[in-house]
Image: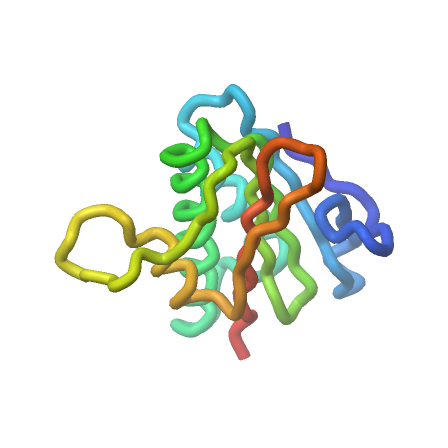
Amino acid sequence: MSTTRPDSPGSPESAESSGASGGRQTRSLSLGGESGVVPLARDFARQALYAWGWLPAETADRRAAAEDVLLVVSELVTNACLHADGPDEMWITCDNKVIRVEVADRGTGQPAPRTPHRAGRPGGHGMFIVQRLCLDWGVVRTPGVAGKKVWAELGAPA
């Protein structure tokens, strides 16, 4: 189930403001217990990118930026599937300069790029890809609550 809500200060993951106003917009998708969550999350993110004007892309740079967002969504959701018994919820936020993707799961592990990165070695490339494509990324843990939220931010094309 997806939700969109009016923007509220201090809670970027639970907001959506009108696309016409140019303010911060957020959409959330509940993924707990769903099957086929990676394509579901990509489709959800693609719909948000259309709603926010990132797609259809007018230039190669804009198309590449949108594809980077979809790849980061895939990698974060896949990591939650592989290392944390699946994702619970995903948020995607746009403020016209940055897209932020957040994926919540109940895992206790700490995502990290494989070091050293070996391009020819199968698997283990997800967080390396996220690190390369994103302006920044990280993990938020809430004291007393099981799990974490992995987030990543990508810049909008010029």
